[in-house]
Every structure is written in structure tokens, then in C-alpha cells.
Image 1 (cartoon, rainbow, N blue to C red):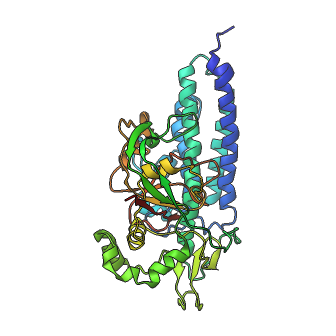
Image 2 (tube, rainbow, N blue to C red):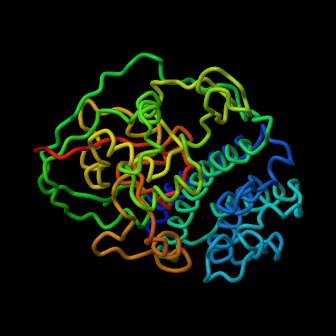
Length: 417
């Protein structure tokens, strides 16, 4: 009788089956998100930075096929050899790929073919539970690590699917709704407070247990001076006061590059805000376009769809500043804080850089995060579009500072005199 490694027979096999159960749920959620959409909805690309829904469904499948099944399932045959070119995103090590700005031209393969591709790969992943890798605990651990990464990768694309879809629908003159109204924060003023953090040496980053992306590691120490942080994100009503005070027409509040964006892009409000008497949807009051279609502006909802430049300008106008990502993480869990997760992503004043001692993952997935650590700003928290259980205190999101189509808002901080 062959020797069976304890990693496989106990913790290893338990982890495998737990991840396979999660796999089924995550994959089903992607299909559920796309279910209200027509085939036409799922093919169109509204800008180079967004991707069609159909592409998201295919790319996340390609990830499992290329990085998990082909290396570990020795008898696996790819569903279609052309898909390696069509649905690679940015992995240089894995060969050439279809240009990102042209993903919306992929009318073929058809949506039905993408669903068949997903079913084919899902069945192959399910078969992993029957693989006899008991003789190689290292191989099993590597396989499980990639399976877990693939789950979180697909959850990232679930949120991107919604943000990209909102941008797409905003380009339609009918301003259609993706879904019926979701519950919003009650239109009752929340009590704003400045909460004091004593500063000092704090631990930043992730050191298990549980999953984290490589850019959240290693755990390290930071020295913070005492600071105060706002008890809640900035609201739409607060941001409207900035607009009505001429915030978008006064360069004193803006970083130079931000002011250039205001001028070049004719920004006058957050993305998707409709001013009174906007010709796209005439009304006497401010409105907001979202996944629920056009809705009245909810003054106590957190402002969203602003760039880092707008967040920084508002903070300057308010006599405050944006927190650094280390202050944000150190404050996480403080009594009195609300909206740290599940509301809006929150811009920080931190550039997206590697932590001291950072090392990217080995193999093709070394390209997952590290090569983007330049020219981007860190956001912390999560949004209402982030899948449940995906985020954590150490999670680092990042986008270029002019990005506006994400569910991104801000929380204020200030120094203690």
C-alpha cells in the first residue's frame, strides 16, 4: 500500500474539498451577475480600460485552464487552442494576446461557446478531487495555492464586470438599469466625528492565516505620528457643497495634474452625476446614474466615482487631507468607524509601491501585481460591488489617479497639532 502524505490525507484533502466547494459558488456567482444581460450587452466594450462581460467570463476561465489545469492535470486537453491568444490579459510569459482595446470586437466565439468553455473547465477542475497527488505534497500545495488565487482573481473580475457594465450603460442614451434598486443608506444624517489614533509603531500587511495577494506582504512595521481620521466616508451632500462652492473652477484646491484633467475632461461633478436639467435626463434636482438606472441624489450616501485628484481636491478644500494607506489600515477596527468595507473604495495619499522585502509569486503569476507598482494610487476598503468575503484590512487596491469609473470615494484624515 503506498505511503500517503499527511498533508494530503488530512489537512491537504480537507483544503482541497473546501476550495472546490468555494469554486462552485464563485463560478456560479459570475454567471448570476451576467444573467440579466443580453448577448449584445455582454459583447460591447465602452472604453479601452473596460472589458466586455463575455471577455470577463472567458478570461477567468482561461486563468484556471492555463495556470492550474495544464500544469497539474496531465491528461487535460485545452477546450480551444485559440483561446490562449484571445483571453490572456497581460501575462507576457504566457505568450502573445489580443489587444486590450479591441476586446469588444470579439463577436466570435459566441456567448454560448464561452458558456460551454466554462462548463468544460469547471468539470476538469472538479476532477482534481480525484487526482492521486498523495506522493507529492509540494505539488498538492502549489496546486491548492493556484486554485485559491484563481478564486480571488475571479472575484476581482466580478467587481470589474459591474464597474465596466455601469460605464457601458452610461454610454447608452436610454441610461438603462442593470437591476432594481438596492437598499441605500437611510437618508438620515450620520454623526460625523474625528477619531484620534495615537500613532506609534504599527504592523502593516498580511501574515496569515487566510488568503492574501502577494502585494499585501510581507508584514512589516511602520512608524506613524498621531493623527485623526473621519468616522465615515465623505457623503454626496458633503461633496455637493464642494461643487456649489466652485470647487471645480478654483485651481487652488487641485494638484497640477488634477487641474489639467479638470480642464481637459470638463469635469464638473463626479462621474455619473446628472446636474439639474441635464439634457440626458431632465430634472430639477441632482440625480445619479448607477446600476439601478437614474436615481435621485441621496445626500447621505457615500460619494463614489471620483478620481484621486477629486478626492485630494475635496480634502484640501475641507481643510484636511487623505489618509495614507498605513494610517487607514492602522485605524481599521477602531470603535466609531463606519463604512470601512462594503461601501466605497477609499483613495489614500499613498503611491502603489512594494512593501519592504516584497517578493512577487513564483512562475507566471509573478506578473499578477508587482509589475504595476508605478504611477498608481492605493485605495483601501471595498465597495458594495465587492463580493462578500473577498476583502480584508490589508487588501490593497490600486488604479491610476485619474480613474473615475470605479466605486471609489474618500475618507478624510488630518494631523494632530
